[in-house]
Image (tube, rainbow, N blue to C red; front, side):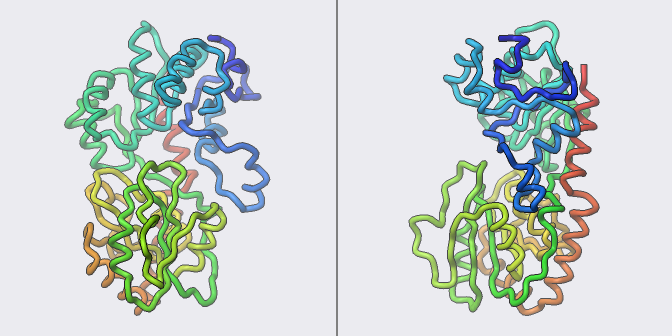
Length: 363
């Protein structure tokens, strides 16, 4: 199988016969989106933006399902992430760099790379390095990881101070929003507030905070990535609170029609909630978010949004009331939030930083 990318189910670049970068994407990459993106019905997926900029090949779970490699099939028994790592390993000689969007793929890939004398460069997104079950593996395998991109300073500090990564191996970058898809829209008569996402969401505290308030609250309690339980299910919601799933363009419409966006979070030490925060900021909305140990690198309190303490329904209720009673302040925060995105956190910024880091670890 090694040397046959089509047989491995890898999407081969048409521009280069021997592309130098392979992207390992731990999901089923969405296909046929070009027309939806052009019609502004769907955001650009970040892995496609990265693939175009790097002129890279892309492998995903579909590639694993289609692979005829014995190693990939055996690894697949341990899960799709292990299978994806094996797929990268068996094709390693065709690439200067292998990039994976997550340590759940990069850990088994690094383990496989210990079995060979020469290897490609290895770059990855480190979403949550500080979970206890990863500690020993990351300390042992860090020498097979050349560049680790992290989204929170807490994760950068943990990687260097606890895991033993060299400072030059770790790069702190901002996450992103597709600023072209999520852009300010005029919504006449906005009469509700909203929240979205699922990972580490403290919806019980938000529900407690808004119970009895004269404001409709709409929750888009879903995520394509998170394994966290939806705490709005099997719960009797107050009359002013509703919860449902939304498509991307429905989510954008939800943001557009809201007076402000709330992102309630349980205490954690990484950038949980950042996707919703940045999407809402890109829409020019005032955002109220829980300031956790890991969520402190995006909002500057009082300048482009508000932070409240974890699990504090009273403080959250007060913050919501203050912005509802002062629409001019909400508008000011929303405008500053959009400016933050445009200057630092667009999809283009993210792609450029990843490309630069990947280039630096080419072999």
